[in-house]
Image: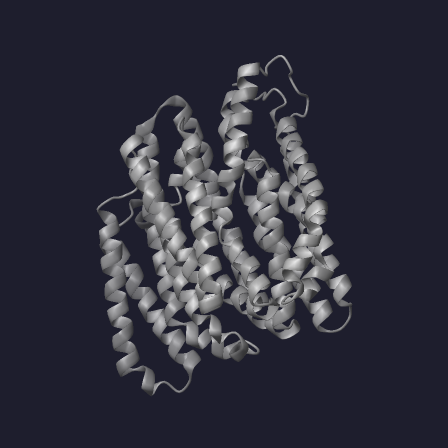
Length: 504
């Protein structure tokens, strides 16, 4: 039953994700590059990345604490002892602390960006409201996750925010509004998202804001505060890529950040499937860890990792073979083609991170969660050091290389620890079949490029024909190798339904 809920919510969440990708694709490559300059694209990226980084710290680990401790508050009759009131209060405290720190450090931030990114310093105070709404959007999503409802919050994050931003881009690009009003509307999209998520939570009728003070013991408070302290630092691990654009903006300027924005958007498509899968798998891991059911966790970890590797490697392959065609058709594409190496490097980094991503909740929701701290510090220090060293030498490619290096060190060390101490492994024999299929597809693509590409009349025709044929081959190989029972069953169920409809 649990796996059925995971499957249904993952599919619904993935639909929202990929609808968001479709909107984001059109917006990023045909609206953003046409309506905004590279400097202005860099400005929006740095505002969002800074807000996401600051909100992850201001959250005080609330997003992870909600998932970890909800099973301890939840009763069979549906009551939760006012758990969600605590879930809203903790990040509010964190935001107030952040706001004080931000005001005190504001002059230092302005000085850091004054030379290369002066436009950012003009709008630096927009970070306060943007951080607040980004913070509570994530908190409301986590509350929905533990109630096993992720589809609507995913729709809000992946679709609604993008649609609001699209309106702002078009209004500014057609000179209907000023840059000041554009930035205001851009930030307002996150306020709208947080409001919709909160209303959705209320509509479910499953939450209570009446705190049961007698239920909270001193020992539980200590556990929650200890976990909060650790996960506040650990939260940096999921946001380490945010350092890239912030470093680029400070050292290379907003235009370079704009090039990085377009390239990283392409590469980050690879990570989309993990958002739904991890969001709905996290509560299951937390519940199983509470019950000491390591067998279920191990089985789930291997399944999640297998599907992450399958989907992320396929997406990476088709992105790589179509990069030249993509840059050739977007407006002002010549201004952004310098990000090609970023796509290749960060795409490979995303494959590694997505395949290993289930290890993070496994460790965070185990009794050894405190050991997430040294791994996160290792990741953060490595990323910061590599960014500082490589960006001045390699520009945007240096930022991507820093991400890859940090991901390798972090994931390998964490995998080894979880395997040795928790006896949980993400690896299975079927993953070898995925690698073999990818090698075969790469050889077929090289053969196509050598024999057929010179005969094609246009780069887009070549890209569409090549991608279509290789996609069919990839599906057939995946089904034939029986890499995933879930994928095979899903495919044949859809095929049988379509065939029955065709026979009517």
